[in-house]
Image 1: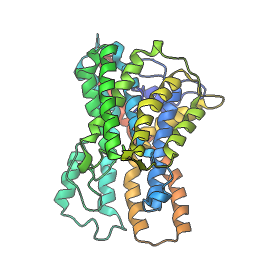
Image 2 (image 1 turned 60 degrees about the vertical axis):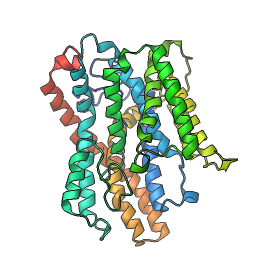
Image 3 (image 1 turned 90 degrees about the vertical axis):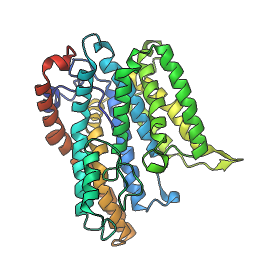
Length: 389
């Protein structure tokens, strides 16, 4: 969902040699495998949405049942890289400087996602009367979406808290995590973080066992689950960074770790047995055990032969594709619902959507996100970027 740190304008626009590791705005090397895994998780989400809509969310035909867990992986990875990027800068950096940097990194694409969502809602040629609603309601939801804030539900958008672009709910949580880090978590010791992770992990496991799934928090009925899903992985990711030197040195590589993540999300759904909702416990195990292990392995791993360029490209478009894909898929949802194509035709169009959405993400990265962030960093000033303000 989010980048491992703020990139310099020169690195982003000039596209350094394919075999040269990327660096952050303060010169730190990127964890290229973790960047690549962020792209893997984002693509899993996109494939899940495309395929799920194509089969009208028929549970037996959905391929990547547990793909929503990619969100929990994003939160864990965010905690880890926030610690890496900012833990050593607080002697010179103030809270307002940190928040300004995070807004510059995250918010240009939030705004683009809101604009695409508004256009999708108002201009969808296949929606018919399903989205007939007073314009003031749509514009009000749009105004809130511009700030990543929840709004009232809109017709034909289930009961989503962010009805113009559903995935933005995770950015709202990301901002909460960033605020918690700036105000509280950065001050905690590794021991205190571990205790908080254990407590929030227990809440996560119990909640998953009660609900039978962690695909919660994006709609109003289970809005309370959004911070539950944020807390454990984000705190655990930060703790993993703090104790990184005491953890096993596992070297597995980007491709095997990506396959492990794909296998976990493609695992069949599990039934309830004796009143125990095994599916929820399985998903909790992925978040509590598998994802931290993947981050530990990814931190130490090399991309693999010929894979560095792919990890870099994957990391660069991971956030853009995550935040831009769903407005287009709302249109796809209404097209499928209208029954205007055969099943073979739907599959063909669904497959074609993948390169189309990748192209949109690349365009958003190159022509929107990077130029805006470059300009905003220029206004903010180099002193604040380096952490002295």
